[in-house]
Image 1 (cartoon, rainbow, N blue to C red):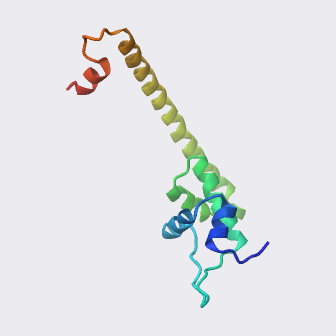
Image 2: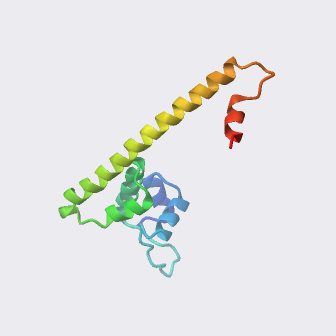
Length: 132
C-alpha cells in the first residue's frame, strides 16, 4: 500500500467522498497537505485512519465539534476523559429517546384520530397545529 494517496484514493479507502475530505479540512479535523510542484496533494495512511475514526464517532452520535475534542485527547491518557464524554453523550441520547417516544405516542394518537374521523370534520392533526 502506498503512503502517498491522492484525495480521491483517500476518500475511496475511507468510505467517504472527496467533498467530505475537503469539509473535514475546512473544519480543521484533517490537515491539508501543502501542494507540491506536480499539483497533487499527498495524504498518508494515517489520514485514512483519522477519517474512519471521525465517521465511526459520528455513527455513535458525536458531532464534529465533539469529534474534534476526541481527536485532541492524548490516546495514552484518554480513557477517563473519553469515558466522561461518552457518558454525557449517552445521557443526551437517553433523553432524546424519551422525547422521541413522547412524540411517537402523540403522533400515533393523531393518526388514530384521523382514521376514525369522518370526511366532513376538520383534520385532527391540522386542528391541533393551528391552535393558539
